[in-house]
Image (cartoon, rainbow, N blue to C red; front, side):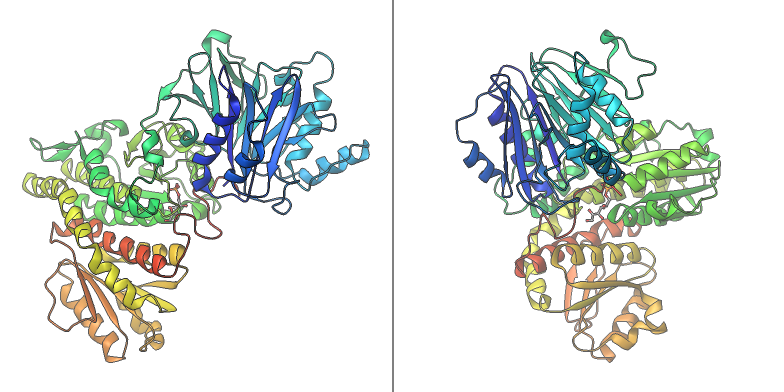
Length: 612
Ligand code: F6R
């Protein structure tokens, strides 16, 4: 994922830009660059290397109080210095940094070529710089030139524009790619992610799609891109306060963010539960979903929508809702939902699940639902994100910033939030006070139980060491264990690149059992529940065919049943998935570490997928 930073104020802009780019490094990139206005001229410095290379290249030769910076992940054109951002017009007057993809870039570039403009890079972004320069002729305000340019642009963008004729302002625009303004004391910051600005300010303004903003050191103005319904200057968007701290984006004593975030789970979970458990009525309090008891009772179905791990968390949620509330429930990848012209049912509660709150497929699913009158709530981690704003109501996950690409603590908080939603729905229906009390106590015990699992990390690391050479692995689970198995396989694949497949236990005998042999280990999820004996017999079937087995369990298993057993504390059976999932995160982490993978930035993956 590309990263954007911008600064205008009294400080030396270059260190602010470099520090901002450094804090966005975790998102992955292949080149970096910055542009500042120095003595009314544009200075652009770029590198096909790391932010540190850019820092070395800049040295202390550049002083300015306004500038923009970018880390690029190549989409149009290979990762080299010419294609790195910022891009400029021919005269070197306008500089642009851009995230997203311009879909009609080819036509725009051809049209510029036909007018005699010589493009020097292979990027879609460079076309924007030339087009803005052409529109900004004479006294035209920069914002107007940007707006006029974007009328011809199809695709997604978060962009920041610098103009030497307007050295006291930055113009930014958003459509499908996040942009946030950081509001300081006579200084302003712009970024694609709050990570780049929390060290300077906690007051932020998130741009919505189709908005453009003009930012000066002392004020800003956000207006709709099409120019209609222009907001008055004093009536611009009001800043919100971000929860994140600069330390959330630092590794501290850890080697990777993934391991740091795995270990943050007990604390993150305590935050998610705080103030939301109601002992008196044995239920949960989720004020943000804004549904009273009558509305909760009228819900006939619950459908969770998310992508990747957020979808698997939704599957955990669906199992919880069916168990505790006895309401039909399922989960579907938002990416499928948005494309299949779904029947939107007014009696269904749709839950949009997303850590980043920016995943385009999930956002599109929410927009489709809203268009068709569906009731949708968000389960989102990043406050102020696009999905959170689009839903307008829901449950914030309070996991804190998740920096590693692999989702860990956010997923745990998603599942815990769904347990609370299921409890709330159950308690206005058939769930007894005694059962509600049991779940409340079970939820309260979870952080301490996860602490216990983490205290035995060395055992999981030892098992990981024994199985790290496997080329393939099966993850087997049924009912409560099934989403856990899917998530475990996903985690192993994405961080270690070991091929992993999840199967429902009973499906094994309908085909995949043919693959079982001594070089195909299976990790079997064995909750201490009414299906224990079934899961034990699954393990026996696998072992009878020579397949090595790792059992991850909350039960007491017969000795020698499996080649390795990873125990988690026994809790309330409905909540077992939250505990059983944690060793799978550790296992994926330690296999990846053993194989020397770049754990926080797996190949080909980005933190949130905001472009098609
Ligand atoms: C896996 C992972 C991804 C995300 C998915 C959705 O570890 O991180 O599968 O879960 O891309 O992202 P969000 O939750 O930000 O919508």
